[in-house]
Length: 112
Length: 112
Image (cartoon, rainbow over all chains, first blue to last red; front, side, top):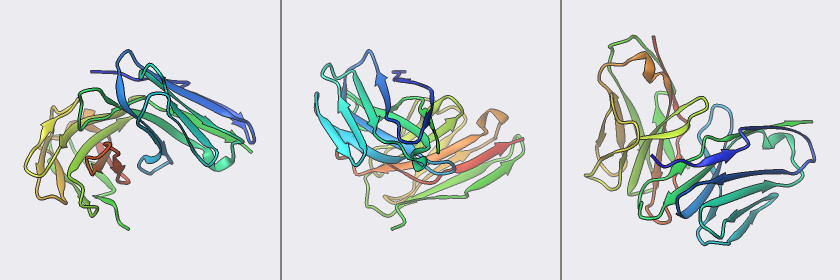
């Protein structure tokens, strides 16, 4: 099936540092979503993007829908310990009305 | 604010046993989904139901069956469990608009 290449797979950072992660594909997407999963919980939506070039913020989080519609990135500024978790990108392929394709996730560890 | 509720939270089965994972949503969403999550694999779609009365296969449907009992409930059945089905299972629902999916807390299944 279609794949999203999410990188990096994991990150170890110090509290206060900024973080950047991204997802790329060879396919065109109509929607990009970013989720966070805490240990033992289900993914929770952070940011939704619907237009090429769109830049959206949610507190310290900023995400962008790539102009080519084949990629997206997520930035976290001034990280704090509660940012720890797995971050997933998900995209709705052009022509796919109901299904999302998920990246494999970025495991973020923040050292206090 | 229950959202998406999954039962049970944990289950241990022996190879060959059968069981049904239950999922209910109280958000009046049209679409519902079952995923499995394995280490390093991200979320993989097993089955989905775009609307009440319809079900379709996802990426990894083998060994599973589903029932969309009504608009609220979508169950996943393992007829003869195998060790390869050891995983964390997530149910999700979506209103269909923009395809934002909301996840339950998951069922952790071990097949011995």
